[in-house]
Length: 234
Image (cartoon, rainbow, N blue to C red; front, side):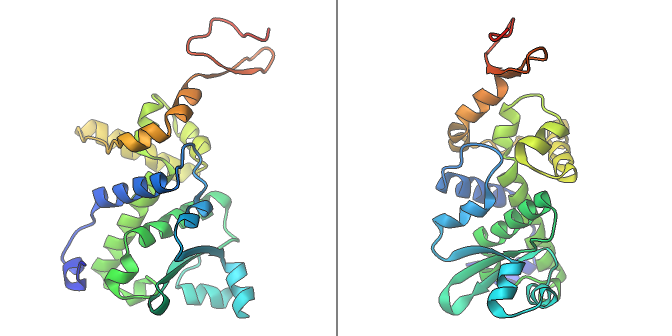
């Protein structure tokens, strides 16, 4: 296991974060976008995903007290070491796409075992060194991006826009813009994207259907064809 001292002198391991995102997709046999993040906990017997409202009601706490417990008004990954149990909490008063990103981010902390590495039940800024906090947050954000908009899938879909990413992946416009910027920056700098053949296989039907889906402007009929010259309906 990586020690706390090692973490304080290291840098974010983005490849590890991306690989962890592909691992959870494959463990759950996810084969289409948008990824249903709340369902990803079902594979793990020691993980639950609950809302702030649920947690407050269950523990007789106000919403503000839940935010204080989580050290965040967005969400947290809580680890109970004595029972080896994880609980991801998210603020259900936030916008839908923001909630999806928060859950994906916290899943990153879970998959990368940040709580266990840091020996912390929660990963608040006040409980970690600046270096630890920065590393954990960057890795969790990288994981969230790769989980919700896998490079392997996005690149195979071809020339797509921020609007496409926003709707295909159910992301906020800000998150979708960051995905496009990340991919474009990598292309410009000659970076090799993290292609995963197992993820590509899982998503193959989705990719083919998405690429070959067409919408007739005349009759509004939606159909699938590799190279259509006309609408089969009209």
